[in-house]
Image 1 (tube, helix red, strand yellow):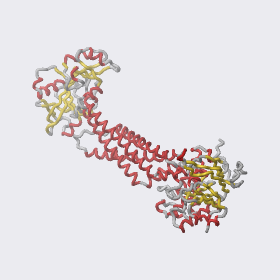
Image 2 (cartoon, rainbow over the protein chains, first blue to last red):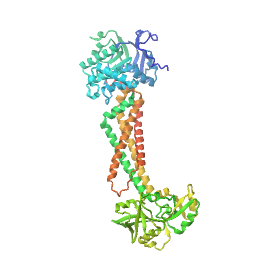
Image 3 (cartoon, rainbow over the protein chains, first blue to last red):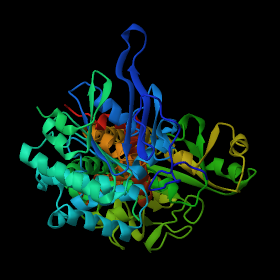
Image 4 (cartoon, rainbow over the protein chains, first blue to last red):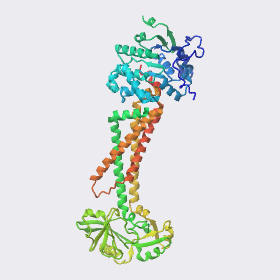
Length: 259
Length: 373
């Protein structure tokens, strides 16, 4: 079977199709977003949520997608993660054209290649921390032993070894978010998408979680995109993309945002 | 490796016991209700029809105006001979039936007296103790085991009016119209009839019906045609023709099926609520790459487990309840009725849960991102 999903190579080889003129040309990039637009509705009631967005993110980079509520950042990250279809444009992750996959292929693609950290952890409430990690392993049919070893190792790294058998309701907000990070990394994805991870946490805890997130992503050479409206979290990222009213712009230096 | 559906359903069943307790309790009560109704339906049916089911007769001949009722039918002993020589008939015997009150060792008892050529067609086949009266033997009877509750033992006298017979045997499952039967000779039956129905004394050769043993595949209407004014029905049809039996059966069955439909509705509502409450979680799980089918299977597995637990608990409660039901309430807990109800409950549970599959399919994984901010 020449299923594009199985043709995994950890480092994308060579440049993809020639990026458009205004796109940052990054031959080694893992993620290419190419002239992606999303329009809801049609005719005079049409609303453009995302207007001709183009971006590229390297393997091993941790970037922020910064913008206020309703700016289109949710739409963009949903399209990148294969949760939403684009009206036009293409998204490539590694050698896979995400915008060309069927729904079924997208489900499998997300399980195998994308890790998600949601705003409010969204753990399975009736599974323990460890089982929440093992759950995603069942989606890609990881052998039981290997899955258990990996879950234990991740929980250890995330400082949750002694919380492994606790249910989400027995964990603090920060601990829950750490379990969610572990779950996102469980299947060794290429890309980790993080949606407002600090929304439900206070500043100090939020910083800890984002720091941990950065360390886990960097140590593993993963690519991370964090959606946030919180400027204070931007300092932990390598680059920042700003989005306003559906228009995506690239901010070269995160420090430039700090006034 | 356990699949995602198993992990989800097992985790939830193990850790949300209170919630599942509620739906299991509802299903248990429904199963209990249905089983008791079923036991009542079976008890009524078996109690009403035992005397025509638990015999060696394959068919009965009635007068045309009897509509299949042994009691309403009026024939004469002279009618037995032509029926015996009808095509397809191997044996025929007169049958007299008398529903009456009588006296046992401990006082008044209700009785259904059957007079026939014992040993011939219509003889009971469910002897459990003692013996049947022998051909031509007078003054003896085999009686329904239910009379043991009234103190009747082998050797006891059972009397109707001033006519008494000695009990020589017991037969089981042989009640008629819920009254315990007494199987005796035509002569003893007639003497008892004359004792309580003096107006019939002038009809010394009257009988109610003729019990037949027919060859397999015999044409019953051809048999009836040999004797104008008669109808021939199979034993099964005679059971249903007993006044009230068919009506009781259909009434109780429709209550049972309606109750099972309620079970499906209860399960459907329960899982509709469960899915509604889990919309956010299911959206997140789909975003993580869970196929819709796995979430659906998890819900179905839970429905099956809840139904099975409901059947088990409901059965136990119904059987315990059966122990305290007064003996004069006709109930019969039969295994095949139990199996039927168990299967129907399981199907109702799965069908009910299946309604939420569409809801699960409609959950959009994209709603997992963005949340409330």
